[in-house]
Image 1 (cartoon, rainbow, N blue to C red):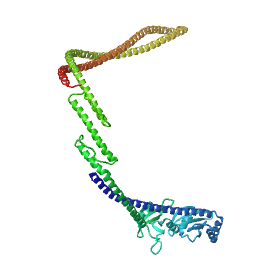
Image 2: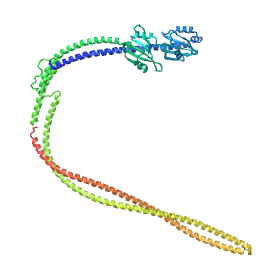
Image 3: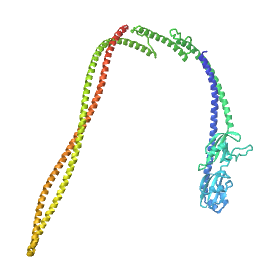
Image 4: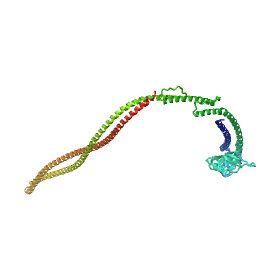
Length: 639
């Protein structure tokens, strides 16, 4: 048997063992998962049924409380404390088992409570103190649900205790689950029985479960040992309307039933799996031996010859093989060996002819499949080599001619670069002369700028003095005007004095001899008044002339000031022009310096070009020599 057959059989054995183990593990895990899911779902269903039963009872208490609160006969009986009538009416109402009722009057006194009501006085007060419904706790009844309605004349409370075992027994019979109701951590109703058939009421919840369910208000679902037996347990918290946890529901199935069913299913599944695996392994071994192992040995021998490069002497597959994939594979390999042998011979001949310089060889084999690209590539290589050799032959001649021309051009370029270097040196010298003249212009412009600034400062000082003189002329004009006013006043006084003297002379003439002396005085006064008037008139004329002279001088001062302002404006404009000339001259100097730097670089580049041109001329001569050698070597190829 071949190695591959042995390897396949060995792997089959390993796969058989692994499949057997996996079959067992999968069956165990699958059946365990199914049983766990089944028991978990059963537990969940039991909890949901229990919740629905208690909710149904809660709805029933609400309906009963509403019905009773609307009964006038009940109200009358409560007011009269007629317990017999109340009890009769209560018993006449159709209701579920274990539902109790409490009736109180307007004073809150209990008129009647049914026999199945185990509430303490505190519990009764809690439920009858107002209209409300919900889950409540009591020291005697432990955990109960009540609906109370308050009306005129009293109140009624209808409820039921969670300690009633009837619902739990019915649920156990339906789902085969143990059921328990906890008030806080205490069992108040349960289907668990001891060895004497007594319910395990009054026992407590495990501490770790209490922390999860009662303290944290979360559902607990896990395998738990209860009363010496493991159970798949589900604990569901019981919450009142405020969200506070009052107790819990328990539903669970014994793990012994789960494990018994699991063992049975695993044994059946493993047995079936083993039989099927043995049959499949036997059939697979026979198939591998006949249809795989023997043809693979023959293919291996042929492949070993191919590995050594023996294609021409490889006999291929000998003997009969099955008409299946492996047989077809063996035949295809034989054909492939023959085809490869032809391809290799053709390519080898082509390479030998090309190595000898003969590019006129033509392939006569038709390449197929992926080998078509190899045949096309070989043909393209042959054609391209032929074309390349021809092109090289032509190009070598052109390179020879071009190198000669290039050598001549390189010599001319070298001479031109030498002339360029000389021209750039002369241009650089001219730029240096221009730069020196610009420097002298800058120095002259800066001196002119300084003189212009000094002239502006002197003109500004003259302007200030003219403005001071103009102010003084204005003051003189004002003073002269005041003197004119004073002279006018003196003239008016002389006129009045003359009138008074004339009047005095008239009065003296009237007085006759007694007034002669007064007449002389009046005459003298009139003479003085006339002289004062003449003097004032002369002074007024002189003052007028003086005022005209002052006004003329003020006008001249104003014109002088205006002319000086014009001079200042012109001087400022001149100074600005000089500043602009200075700035532009500096800019010209910078530009010339940049041009000089550029000329230096150009000179350097021209010198480098000159050196390169000389090197190019030498290289062209060398290229010409190489082109000659290439023409001689390419002449051996035949196209």
